[in-house]
Length: 374
Ligand code: OSB
Ligand code: MG
Image (cartoon, rainbow, N blue to C red; front, side, top):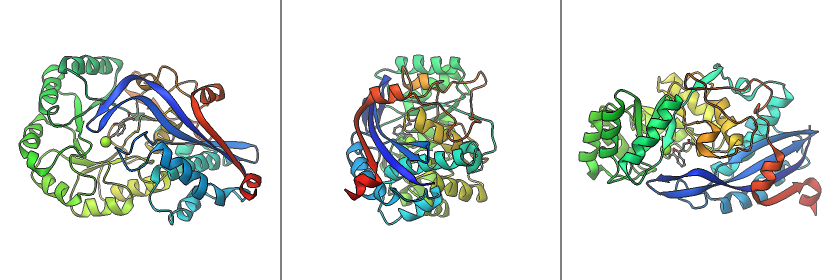
């Protein structure tokens, strides 16, 4: 099987509601979609980069040229590599994990279609449905936050995560505990704190939270270890875990007791499975994070979190939590028991609507072996 062409599309889609974190507020989803064509099949992946380098260092305007100039050309006109071989081959390109992950996901989709198995199965997944939760952004008032959370709980979501930042932390968490009792509740700081915020952490420690996600700077494993030693609540690292080596260091230094795995952040599904396996051998639970993906990126995440050590609910909500209209039809839906069903058809197992992809695309390019030579 030979790779005939690879297409890139930059996508812009309005969220149903703006999403605010400690690093900023977005009302429009952007990303780079990758479509790989090989012998009559097509595979799709999503690089869930943002407009600005606020979550990690990548943006739409970095992922595009890295794909165009460094990741795509070596593949064109050549035999389709296994996704693992691709991951190996691009280790010499430093970082740019989301750009790599978008292309790698398309190769996984193709590999699974070729073998006529669902992607979940190819990755070693064992679940037919996964438990999911909602990641709830910062709102302008605690009443508004409460109303949104009430809506999500009524829909059946199993776990609520709220974004926190200094000045929006203890009070919202206390309100949700008072109002909704013993729900599965966790908080995500996206690196907004330092060790000098110990009084805030001590207060949060009394709310019986499932975990506190990424309180400190992404490169600060040491202070996370210090903080973890002073808290009962498990710390969970997101931004810090950029590859398996980072996971090894964090676990060895006891900087966290839980890991959030985002395949896009760690450079692809192969790296994500490796981190899953590492954590499994050390009895460290993991859960699947999200980057507000379209249905295309979410399908890859969904396949991933069917693996056995994804024991906490995923940041993977139904399509209608994010968008008026998703790029896939049927959309992702929430089952009555707070789960999402893992697709059982070959590859990603979702149906992409080409007309919608075109409608939301703001930039498109197609690369072929001939265009690479010319
Ligand atoms: O820190 O987990 C995060 C979205 C964008 C950037 C960072 C994060 C998030 C989320 C979204 O929490 C979770 C989802 O996709 O539902
Ligand atoms: Mg996070």
